[in-house]
Length: 227
Ligand SMILES: *Cc1c(COP(=O)(O)O)cnc(C)c1O
Image (tube, rainbow, N blue to C red; front, side):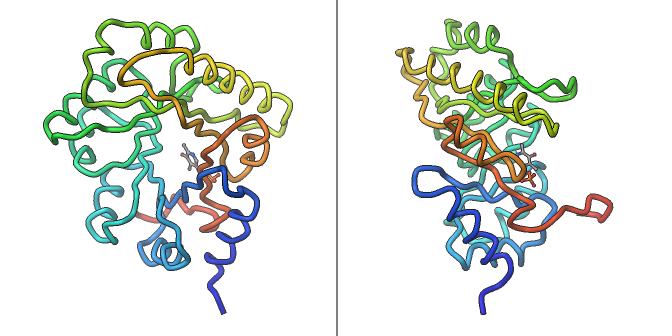
């Protein structure tokens, strides 16, 4: 019989379908659980903490595509720059500049999403719509040869009010659609990363084509245990 993780994965994949990419969010989960998902065919994994991500990259098969989905500090970019597949949480011009620098050092182009702040919570990171437009139009961005901005990422408000979350997702979709008009060498908007375990179906209905699902696949997280 297949494992519970394999069954959960099948369940989520049946809901996401073929046109939406699934990032299995494995933060705080041990390597053997990731390997269960891997054995079931999953190759895209998302992590929030640089040290944990780098450790898992070292230990696990090299054909895994690693997504950095958490808040990233500029001074830690260097630890993931050699291998990261996509950085979802780019939330300041300074961070983007550092990613470009580390991309150059590693002789590669690092794929990024700009994080949009739409949720009500004060604590969530990200740009607002004006800041995104300012960044995309800045002459400096055009000089960054070692990043590719592939789209946007957002987190909806943590609320039961799904109308509010829907309005937030639609706002980000509109911003994403606006990016298609841009003609910049290092901006190639294809990815709209929205939706987690509690809201990924709503996010897909609002145009998301990449969802980040953790607890529905791996179970609830226990933050009190040491990582
Ligand atoms: C933890 C996390 C997720 C996954 O959350 P679940 O509710 O467990 O699906 C998705 N996106 C980000 C940015 C996260 O930090």
